[in-house]
Length: 553
Image (cartoon, rainbow, N blue to C red):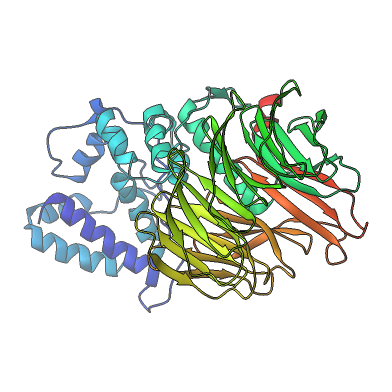
């Protein structure tokens, strides 16, 4: 057994005696957590292997003259005893030490531990070349990295490495770094660590509710907000009062009111500052949200424009006149008319290559918009189709017949029929083969569209008490709004209710949250009532507030 092995065995025996005592009683441990006594540079490495404890102390940079016990003069015969000890073989020394430890009192064992234990507290990170030390630190989760930075100055330098934090951001899907920021104590924080801290703070604010008081934007009098769009710092609300309003998400001010429609606005789409709206007056209008100017009025439909989907520079609109129209937003020209439905078109999806539409004729149709040919008519629903999702592989349709159907977009075959909801599926979102559906039966369900399996039903004691009106999922979270006047937050992975993000004062007595839109950092809710118990308004919640406070402090 080598020197280190012998020393460790002695240490183990002393610690066991100290912890349990001769009669088995447990004593408080005298071991202290190693924080390190400051960085030891690579130059402190000693090549020769220590053979005695004194050599080990010198190798660790300590003086050979350690603190002596000041209990009086050394006992008679000490040198003879030590000389005899040195003459014994390794096994004989171990046996003698065993016997010696067994005869020691607790205070004497503590003294030996205080002398020996520090020699095992090696700052291995500081002894490694920087590249290897950083490689070791890549295996630590971010929370442990932040704790490691508090160990000593050299560890802090390593744990603040910008490339190290870039890797942590990549693991979390954070693709943009922040400008370098300075903490109150004056220490600079690298851009990638700053990005990680900001995203972690935003995630915490979403889940735990630190967003401050919501900003209230009042408008549209007592009318219903029928559609809601959100892009950058601009919010656009459409109403059955024939207008759209453009709001600042930062100040909460109404920047301008878009007037021109002669009927209620029922649908809208937005890209940057371009807004397209559809109305009961049978027209679509293209607006510049920055100036408030109506750029184009699109004529062609002969009944209410009920739905639309914008992709790139083209928008597809569906109408109660049973047709769909494809428009060029920049010129205002109608490029194609898709005919084939025999009742109102209620929902539409467009990916730039194919159009998918659902109607009150119980049909779902897949179109090639450039040739105006219907590629597939998807039959199976036994009532009106109200909602659609399309991700280039699957078409998903929700109907008043309570079912959701998953179709193969290429063949038109029905792959799965998802059952479990008890009423109309009013809204759905599909992303990465995960479908979230909101239903008038007051529940939200999470599905795997590849297997057709229901992963979670978002209900329980904190479930909605009325029909789900809108939903959205992002950041591993599901947001759902309801006729019960609440917006609830759920964990997408577990299906657990996290909290009520919004709860109107008039919830349960007429208050309704009609629409929600969310970005990574903000949530916008359109709320009101149908009986006058709640004013029509927008609520804006900002989950990046702590970050902004730090910037302004």
